[in-house]
Image (cartoon, rainbow, N blue to C red; front, side, top):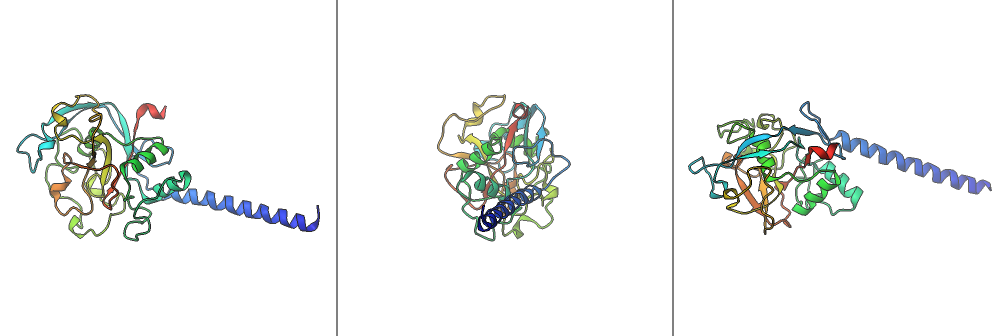
Length: 276
């Protein structure tokens, strides 16, 4: 091998090593950017912390005359859910970017908007299909509507994640928010299971199709929603909501699964057996 060939080979090797180092460092930064919490149990393929929700019954929905109840929240009914795990936080821009880089999936709509692209802000501008694809990549799935409500509500029938009173414990108040807050910043708004941002970050896609009268005929054990539909269920409140009425854990909303909005994101769940 000539001296010139040796120099070329050496240069190529240096480039390879430098590239590999950058990739490893990037992966380390992306993983460490996700906050950790003592309540976290399992994780998915992407390393995001999750919370274990034990099996058992809870009260889902509301009866007539409860607060600012809507007809699609009725009737209140007891639902039994098997055990599952759910993300401690909403999926962040950091994690979604990693998913996009590794899979070639389309990026979020607002990825270049400074107001929405902070590394620890929840990702927004994603469709239902985008959210489902991310969860599958992470070895998870979207939570069912029932799983979402049990996580936010607990088992005592409360109307808000923090209790019965509508006044949010969030110190600065929703009226002052001008963008999605960083995940985990609303300590006082945690659910009874210690899960963050169920009503203070962004509205969240869940797995179910929407049907106004679904509660009147839904199964009392592990309901999965209607088999077909035109719109998907959205749960939770968002940074754009100005009233605590939107913070009620039983509140149901819906949207076309193809829509990508700046106040809608998601989190993932995982069936216990998926970890075994």
